[in-house]
Image (cartoon, rainbow, N blue to C red; front, side, top):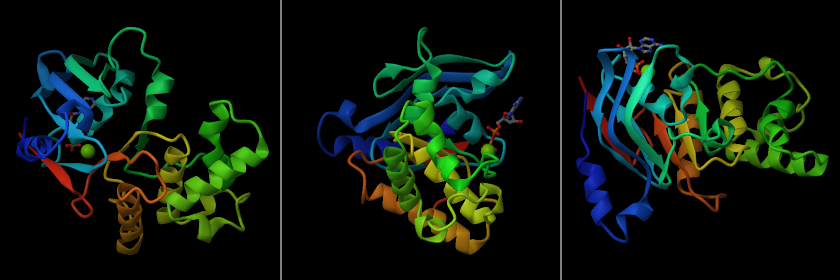
Length: 241
Ligand SMILES: Nc1ncnc2c1ncn2[C@@H]1O[C@H](COP(=O)(O)OP(=O)(O)O)[C@@H](O)[C@H]1O
Ligand SMILES: [Mg+2]
């Protein structure tokens, strides 16, 4: 697998110290599901902060594998292992002593197929903040409203927050999953083809949501995304086998 880093390097030269502009850096990254058969080979990339970044390439070339390395979701696959380094905000995320909950709060994920929890809309979005220790109802209400607003879903669900999330349409469920990720105030959101299972209107809404986040409308820290489509992408890496 080869990653074209030309655009990243152009961006890096523009201004300011390079390190300050990079949020994820990989160094000689190899990843194996099975020993001897690399799924990712020799990946050296710098992913800039505050940008929408997409990985493009044929099916099976390793896009999802690479995304899952960034929040250590691949750890769950028995027998898999990684060589090289991944630095996120300068920290080696595979070194001993890294707390995975903290990492996954910082590096949120939205999957190809929406996966709301079988609970109410409100409870889905409040889930992460509650686990992270927010218990005051007013504070939670604020977080829930803000995250739903940012995912462009608040208007549609504000009068039915206690309804089951499973009653929402597919597109709404995916925006709920985005809201659930945003509620943890991540610095990075990984999205693995988040709109591939949706109709064109829902896809458009998801793309608008990503663009709005990217322009930083209600964020003090703007976000970096890994996404699977080209619209709303500032910046992308192409991946070839
Ligand atoms: N859980 C897994 N166990 C073993 N091999 C896997 C697993 N997931 C993906 N692979 C293999 O790793 C390669 C890259 O897959 P993937 O990252 O899903 O590609 P993409 O997202 O670009 O379509 C493929 O050859 C795929 O079959
Ligand atoms: Mg994939």
